[in-house]
Image (cartoon, rainbow, N blue to C red):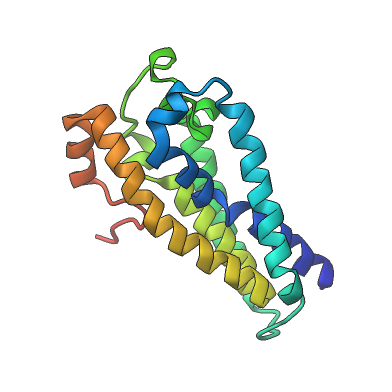
Length: 191
């Protein structure tokens, strides 16, 4: 069981820092566009965030809030949603777009609003995938560390998404505004 706890802790350290990665990008997009090194700096900065997350949560890595084997069934359902979101978003969302090259190098990449497929259900399907991954590990392991990293990701995501949305409205104009009025950001409508 500790192997699963450690694996969840490692994965949540990476997934939980994704909003921080984007907080390094969106508020400072004009600086990144003029910087010489761009991605050579972003990747190590993000990896540093992993190390910080793991270091801060290591004392709580094996602190368990509950033990219930049935929670892994909920985790499996959440991971299925994650896989669905990741795989379907990947059909219309290239790796370059996923890591931010479209934001930082807009002149080198076609600038279009992706609104078909899973992007017609939620505007940020990859973030929904991250959230389901984090929740899956937190619910399954029941550890303080995974819940802390999930909570951190939710809080930083709540700050980051409006900043990203502002940048997307500036970049795409009316097309993005119209899209945003039709499609919810993270949680799909149930009706």
